[in-house]
Length: 515
Image (tube, rainbow, N blue to C red; front, side, top):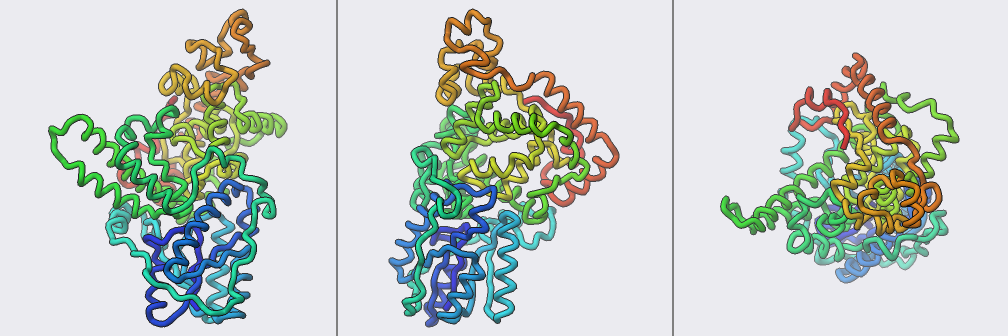
């Protein structure tokens, strides 16, 4: 029996282990697809009931599709090595076939344990890359070219015929509901995206053919990004679509749009947006590669000299600040609206994600490790490699990225001046006039009373003063980056993780910028 072990690859298309299982079945072998609800994974601080619900929806669709071609999906609750041992005792396992996963420390240790178990029992364990992340990585020089080459390769076709073993004892047990794994209910069911490969395909098609024309222009807007962004990120994170399929679909669309210099404005907008989307697929894997190359960045700062940067705050004050940020009651409307939208839907656009992390790190001066796992739980598209690389980048602990301290007021002025987004997610601010929406605390007391939105009552006072917090963070960060130790560590980080499309000196020495 051959076991296709499913992790973050819940699809038939472009699935190398399944394609190999198809070839083995044609040669007379038998296979099962195995997916596990692992307690060690789902009780970790970065796991959420919303993630599990998306996965279960995707597995339901996968199960119907694989049964249609003679395969069988076995769904169990348990740790991988234990379940493999149970299966091997019933029907001898010849090979375990899987995709590589760039996950958190728990899944990294688990994958090594599976490889060790297979090796000890003489069972072949084969893994394939699935998204352009290299293992091992020969270095950042030439990484982009290697990634492009991977994206251009033909996709693995779904198998047309599979054979399952006859043993009736190889069956699913009850799928682990979120409550049994300590996760509670999926609180975002009414607002989140649905799982499944068919939803992924529909999402890509609607983006490339209908919704995506203004993607390049509007991706930063919390008002327009909900429609103009691809919204593929949960599907890429949980593997209901491969990055390669998304890239190849965009590449075909770009070819259809042509290259005429004098094309009308609509076509120029489409071409710019599709190219921008394709570049972000590369960035997707670029950031995952960082965790692949250095798993410790889940817990340690990339630049060691920043480890103690945010120590010393009184624990009760830090806890109060963290709670206000998590609950969307900081007194800064754009921050609060973005957080409430994220918590209720599982998604917010990239610029607003960056602003949320910047605010927690720079305005509230919180260590990224105090909020990164919780924030990961809020994202339906939680991808550990991207998550921890980005959180560190926005917190200023990488040493190779421009320091950006986002101004909550400027984000309102630039992206929601009439309050469409803010008034939806922070309804207590509906009566506030547009001119005070960015900073309602500046409203005169009489006006607060007239409109029925008193600061400190209906809406909180700002948790910190922006100007003071900005100057303090800028001073501390820039002073640290100017030290010889920071400069040396920055060079080391760039050699290991930096994009080779930019100048090292430009990246390292940029002064903090207000956004």
